[in-house]
Image (cartoon, one colour):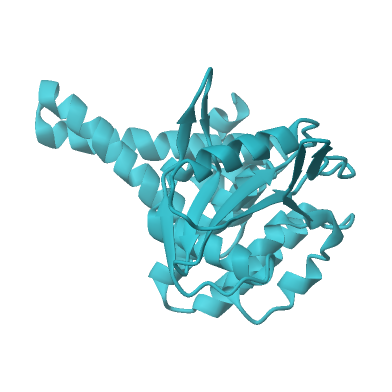
Amino acid sequence: MKKDTISKDILKTIIQDISLYILKLDVQKLELLDMEFERVESRRADIVAKINDVFLLHLEIQNDNDYTMQYRMLRYWVDISLLKMKLPIKQYVIYIGKEKLYMKNEINTPNLNYTYNIIDMREIDCRYFLTQDNPDALILAILCDFKGKNPSDIIKFIIDKLVEYTKDDLQAFRKYMLMLEELSGNRDLKSLVKEQEMLSDIKYEDLPSYEIGWEKGMEEGVQQGMQQGMEEGVQQGMQQGMKKRSTEVAQKLKEKGMDVALIAEITGLDSNVIESL
């Protein structure tokens, strides 16, 4: 999980939701810990947090089978133990891969007995989350195996429900969409999420990606403004950022076989430009 791309507030919400709905843990207090370890290679644990001042929670989200996972988790356990926080450590691997789970969750030798927990999301029916009357649970459905159902249909259902749950609370809607985009990246579904965002009735300026693209355009514009004049540079940077985003969306929609005229209507790009992509 790319923690650098999301705020600590959103990351905390994701951890609390996973703890409640998947791990069945009661989290009243949560403190994120920045875990980066160095031996021969630099390694970073996905998520380490202090829970209720009672134990340390270590989460890894895994989208493929790693036959050395038990040794990796043991190394993490040792590194986390070296923090000397004198708290027990609970370790979980959340497996979201398509293949059958083959990873071992224990090491048994004459001198060492070690175990950690594995949650196989393939065994959890996504309907469990989709039918919860709660947007936090709804978001977690993106991690489940869709049991042969069309991913685009599932994602569309999630987005439509988020619109319904948040109603006029734009801040809450953006927060949940950022969570959905972040978790979808773990299953390589982020492009489908972006596509369904564009095909929905959501205003483009309401999407978190719009805000991110706008800020990026502002940053590029300021840099150009130092050379060409602040006002001209900011305006040009914003236009370039928006044009680049529209082009990326058009490219994805065209790859999905959508009609050029409809893509032009959605993105505002000239049909000739779309044809040339």
